[in-house]
Image 1 (cartoon, rainbow, N blue to C red):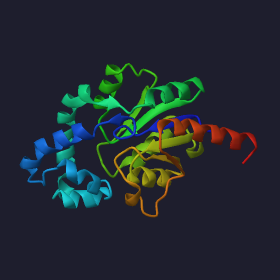
Image 2 (spheres, one colour):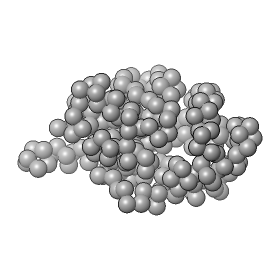
Image 3 (cartoon, one colour):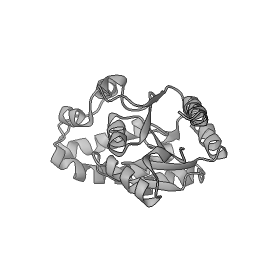
Image 4 (cartoon, one colour):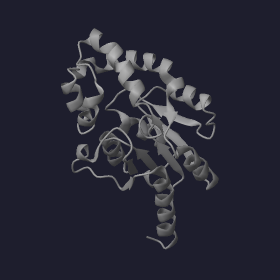
Length: 217
């Protein structure tokens, strides 16, 4: 039975694409990267993280340094970041149904908690983060261990191919949301357990899971 529903942050809960582009371009000259322009976004959304890095001329060994600076600059943009339309009522309804809510992200905990406080989202108290773009599976494992949870007791909601991979490594079922950063083309053969095209679909998925549990499937 599912006890916790864990969400990715950027692209899943919040609109942060404009902030991402602004901050990225501030660092592009320093790191000699390709400037990110609005017309390239759709193309980038079809690529994996590694493919995006190659396209933007960001060597993998520079990612930790770039990420550290990026997250510091990102903090200043938090007041201009907004929740995805339809997400707040879904979060409140999930809480009313008895689920615990968490965020597992590769943003920084400081940035996320600042956003939650700014938007009065006290219903999410558990925040687990790693600034390693390829380390989300380890964060999920840390989350499971911290709360002594079985993989079957957690449902993860995310918008990227790496979210699916991270969940697969931990045996956690995953909902992929279509309104986030990655397009379906970027998923390849790594398909999610569920697809949500609107925030309300998350509630429908949970209702379906309750029915399956009730009949013993």
